[in-house]
Amino acid sequence: MGQTLTEKIFSARCGSPVRAGEVVMAPVDRAMIHDITGPLAIQKFREMGGTRVADPEGVVILFDHQVPADSIEAAQNHVFMRMFAEEQGIRNLDLREGVCHQVMMEKGYAAPGEIVVGADSHTCMYGAAGAFATGIGSTDMGFAMKFGALYFRVPESTRVEVSGTFPRRVGPKDLILAITGDIGADGAAYRAIEFAGGTIRGMNMAGRMTCCNMAIEMGGKTGLVAPDRVTWQYLAGRREMKPFPLDADPDAVYADRRSYDVSELAPQVAVPHNVDHVVDVGEVAGTPLDQVFIGSCTNGRFEDMQEAAEVLGDRSFSEKVRVIVIPSSRDEYLKALRAGLVERFTVAGALVEAPCCGPCMGGAFGLLAPGEVSLSTSNRNFRGRQGSAEAKVYLCSPATAAASAVRGEITDPREVS
Image (cartoon, rainbow, N blue to C red; front, side):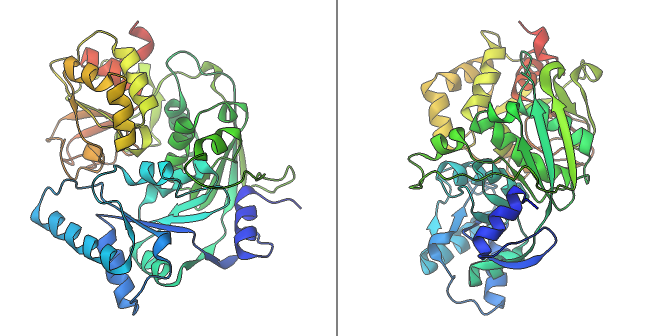
């Protein structure tokens, strides 16, 4: 009997055949903490008697949720984490680089066949690089930092096969929203979601990251794409690794199989207050907006900025809408800057901010008042996620966000020529 991609990764890292459902102690190749979850993880590390982390090279600290510090408490957390990084000799990327998940990918800190954990639920995004990557709690992170390993129950897998060619102004974010709407918020609970098929193979890394990023919104433990030419080209210069084959076996056993054809897919929107409440954009078109956010670890890459800029064209954003644009990392910001996109968005009326999480988790800025409505390219629209619990957040693609920001209401991007 063949193995899924997840079973192969755990078998290789544990040194013996592993099957879904088994509980194993597996080595952790990389562990990431950020400025929100890091202080508690460090506290748990200390409570376990930790004095030195097992592998300083394997731990990465990133500041992205509240940067620059927006409160004295946030500033104190930053100081606490800087001191820990210096004490332990840990790679501390501080506030210079951007959103943790994007930076982990572009620095090559996740690679095919590795097991990567992060004290953040969207760590599953690194599965785009062929790694088993998953979010864990602060206690587990304290354990992982102390011992360099962690107990896992090897998850079952859901196979998602995607075929067809995307229609104009429809892309990966629309696909993953549609899949989330179909599978449901807990339809893949504690499963690894393997994304496969011709459409996924033809997708660039930015699109694959978008899909894997939102596996958690279906309850998934991780999202995975088998490494191929696209993966290894992305990793070239980021990691010194010789390409090797890694894919699920044809006779692997899956808990569920789903098939999707994107050929007739319309732009998708997740409506308040759950990510799996997904509809075609036409069902909510005309909804007035107060704010549009283009960014986050889901859609803050250069390709996303390009998509938004193409829809924007020479227009201006509606004066009725606050438009916030945040590239997901310093590298992505520089790409947008050099391509003239920062100037284009600014002239159109947007606020282009330094790389950080921004409004995504309602922590630093861009908060919504009671009754306000936001359209966001981020990954969650829970009540209170971006400010007041009485506000509403819709989720969409960069193309839909840009078109909607131009008109001041939710708009089908195919209608903006």
